[in-house]
Amino acid sequence: MSDDAAGGAPAAPGPTPAPEPAPAPAPIVRAEGLTKTHHGEGAPVHAVRGVDLTVRPGEFVAVTGPSGAGKSTLLHLIGGLQRPDGGKLWIGGQRVDTFREARWAVLRRRSIGVVFQFFNLVSNLTVADNVELPALLAGASPKAARDSRAELLAELGLEGRERAMPGELSGGEQQRVALARALVNHPALLLADEPAGSLDSKGTREVLRLLSRFHQRGQTIVMVTHDARMASAADRVISFFDGRIADDAQLGGGRREKPGGVSRVLDLKE
Image (tube, rainbow, N blue to C red; front, side, top):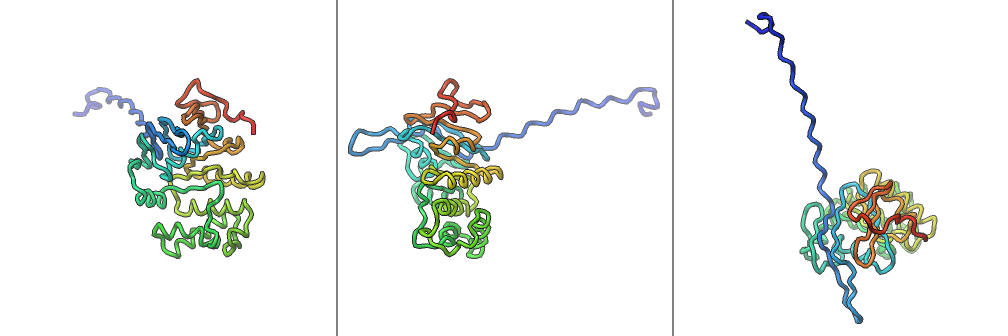
């Protein structure tokens, strides 16, 4: 005989368990105690002093500070362009601070795009060849490299310039070609070292607009800049002074790792 037939009330359903929060995505960049000292003719220069840093997927992080603070050295360590003297570094969950150059080269081709202040285009290659070359080196077929190049150049307003040589382009156009080259392999991480440092105000606006557009699509970006306008496009600003992180602020008022440090980074005058 059922409970209903016996006059008993049906059992009340138990409370629905709350869904478990999704785990936070693994960081794309994680550094612990990273150090780098430059040795030259004079006294040693301690460019990076025990830096701890985490960059999550989709973040746009601007690193700002005075000349000589160590900003570019930090960026070059993250991209494997220089080797740390100490500390540990992970890219995409893989420890990389002990990599030799050959392994770094493969990692950069597959996962890291780099944009420099002075473009670093190959002067005797056309725009098309400059953009396609990293894709071919990463193992893409010629057709796939051409398709990726055509898509990026169209998006960056460079259609019709495929056969031009770098010396025939304006500074802003050259930096857009450099950006296309850095993005052609769809890297998980884009590193930009003063990407508008040698451009006029129009070129700066172009680069800023393009970086913001790719960031809105989920591109992770770490950018070194002196320019407060460039830094204002990021959603996190790190102040770097004397080889250390002095402040780490989320734009909109949030604060991360260094409460009590130097704040209001964007109040710095040009």
